[in-house]
Image 1 (spheres, helix red, strand yellow):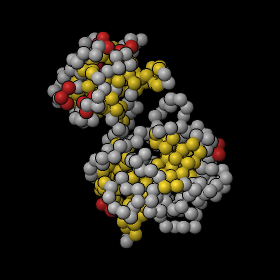
Image 2: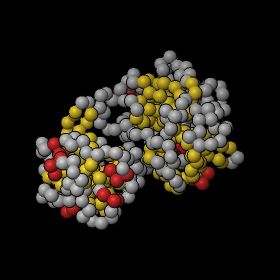
Image 3: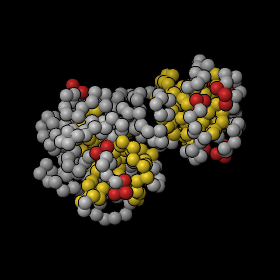
Image 4: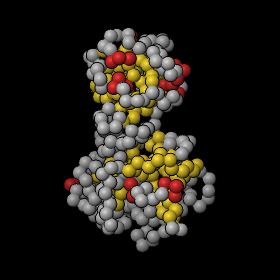
Amino acid sequence: MGGSPADLDATPWVVSIRINQDGFEWNCAGALISPGQVMTAARCAAGFDPAAIRVVAGQADRTVGGGAEARIRKVWIHPDYAAGAGATPKNDLAVLTLTRDLPQTPVRIAPPISIGGSPYAPGTPATVLGWGSTAPDDFTYATKLHSAVLPVVANADCAGRPGYVDGRNFCAGSPKGGTDACFGDTGAPLVAKGVLIGIASYGFGCGEPGQYTLFTKANAYPLSADVRQPALPIVNRNSKQCLAIPASSKTMGEGAIQWGCKGLADQQWSARPVPNTGFVEIVSLNSQFCLGVQGGSMTPGERAIQWECNGNADQQWTRQVDSYQDGEAVYKLVNHQSDQCLAILGGNANQGEKAIQWPCGENADHKWTW
């Protein structure tokens, strides 16, 4: 409501979720968070046969065809999701793993540490996108993708509403009403400062003054182990070179190298949560192998290797802010097992320079931007 047709070229990661059940097609929206995974509301998946769900990307007008379509291979619903009969849902979050990767560019989830101001700060303008109704008395879905700008609401004005869980929900909307998500916008992504901050869960009417849409925070949950975020190069602060393992080799002991960040697949990694821990695995986009440092050794010169992601502690890392540089976080990649940092000896731009781990001190070669 109160929005306008959206430019899908600027938001290629918005997807339409269509659920055929008992001769009726339910409509939801979602966000492509990796080439083969969509984040949406749990209400858009719970209780439905995955075979009845389709995800369509690259189609702003639902009536004209085209776009890229995928079926669902796996559904992950947050284990604390609760939605009894007539009750407002809590922990309303799901991730759909698709049967194939889609060609559209995914969106990044808001990081837990914000640079230059939190996107959740009250008053921050945020954009919601979906195919829901555009009028409060119209229960038909819009044929074209619409977007509307909703300011983030202070927690004090949102807490206590049905379904609200402190730290896991927030509200967005205009206190004067008139601009809002509406029927059919369940699962609609909300973005601010270029990142995904929320998933539309529940509305209290459409566009009524003082009534806001309740959103599930996109970054407040430990996601399933196979949720992959868009792959990004890991860039050395000192040398401005990228971390890579040549040839996507499966051979243990393959030396990590750094070279110019030119988009080669071997340089691109995603951080994947390790179940029931606060750690991540650093997974190669190209090979789906993990980055590790052999033996958790503190000896400089120990080579980085890649191997299958089978839970070995040497593959598990935390990402800790070391400092800020020009408003951008500089991270330490800290090994779960050894509490050592990842570094490349000498910060040298030459290919073949070996990765090592050593105590997380002041040496600039430890420090990476993500």
